[in-house]
Length: 253
Ligand code: NDP
Image 1 (cartoon, rainbow, N blue to C red):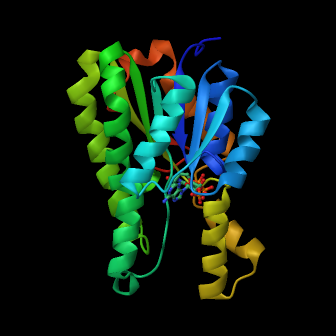
Image 2: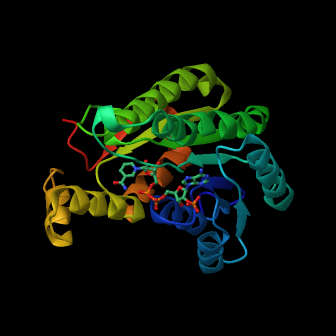
């Protein structure tokens, strides 16, 4: 299998895109650490994967907790070869109603936590001369949309981080890329659907239909569709791709 001997750490690995990515990487032979705040979903995914998986709890916005979790993960499976920065949050609403706390929480989770995790994983990748960092941005990292200012700004910033860091480390064997999905059928989108219902009075089916028609394919993506793009970037032949922002099912064109 093409990722045998590699150790991948996936943040937000207990649900949605993160869980599907962890399973995809494990199916290619990687050992996988799943990191998130809630132990239960992490353990459920780890149990599905089997002995190749390790569940580590940490809030990605707590640098000390993340450092401890990375330490435990390294003790279990060794150096991190692959880092999937997937944990993220979304809070929508009109610009004038988004609070300072909304902005802080969104940037702490969607951007600054990635500085923390990448600083922890990168030294080992540079030492070995091989590494993959995949950041889960969004189509909102490539274009604007109303009522998502803080989220969109955080994902644009993540795309900037991706492009610049890629130029710094590519010659040293490490690629840094971003995947930019449109709407994916995950717990995060369930929350968006609930918000639409609350603010517009529409039914769940109507709110979902509203989202489904936004993408060029007229439906939401599955987590597995996004996971396979993330996983593909981690495979050996993709050493020639770095600093890329891969739109997955979104309408960026
Ligand atoms: P989920 O809500 O299922 O996944 C988010 C994951 O992040 C959860 O497993 C959650 O676990 C974890 N997480 C959130 N905050 C923290 C934190 N502070 N510390 C540690 N873990 C945290 O939704 P998705 O799978 O959809 O989201 C994954 C990524 O995909 C996000 O970055 C999102 O922005 C991005 N994305 C999603 C799209 C969509 O339409 N759903 C579209 C484009 C991009 P826990 O709560 O246990 O900590």
